[in-house]
Length: 91
Image 1 (tube, rainbow, N blue to C red):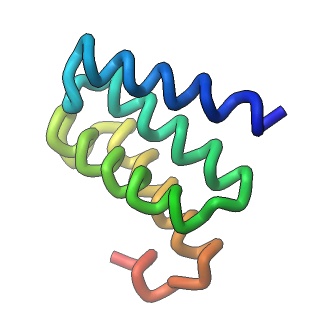
Image 2: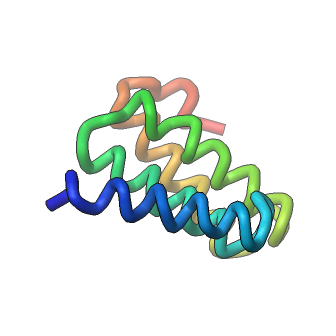
């Protein structure tokens, strides 16, 4: 059912971008959710910029030490590990 979920995630993201702006925490959460879905579908190349966008968004909105920022950093690191980019996954 992942195929059915993708258009819904994309609509939610577009709606939040329009209503709340691209930097709003709810929009950033939608970016991260779409990245996770794409990763689950094996669309790793498409997911990576979204993971990076989510991390940048959390850092800007909440700061580097916030738990949501740490979770986004972990998501990106796990994604890079899955792609075999271990050197990038290490700070």
